[in-house]
Image (tube, rainbow, N blue to C red; front, side):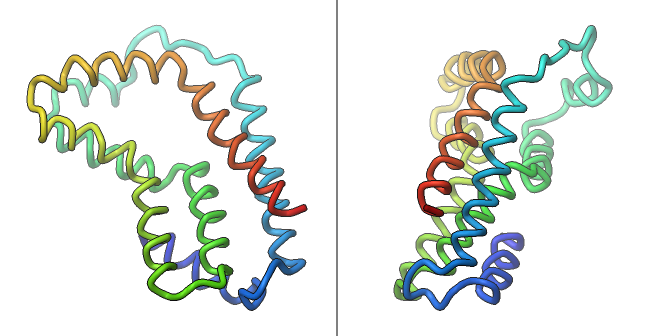
Length: 168
């Protein structure tokens, strides 16, 4: 939320007046599109090495409560550069939109929700469904772990294409 507020404040100073696309807005969109697009390509093209044994952090976390995982996930997402770039791009469009303040507040809330959904969804499912959610979350974990690179690259590429389209 703090990053979102900082982005909105800074982008309000460098962008246009909100009455249509301006050159600086297009440059920001194009630059973010290039960065996200290149990042997506790098994610897919790198050859990950599987660790031979669990890391020290993984071993430590294996005996901890769910609250520790949520906290660690929040820190990881707050420091995740791709998430920050996506929030930056969204903040830029919200800030420059010619929309009423209540619409901008709603859009900011939805952007923030989208950014934290991967963190909030699993605990919410466990809270709502209890032990019944364990099987689904286990299968979801296996799927997302197996396809993590492709999922991340697809999200970054899709946003890069949208930003490039907006920049044109």
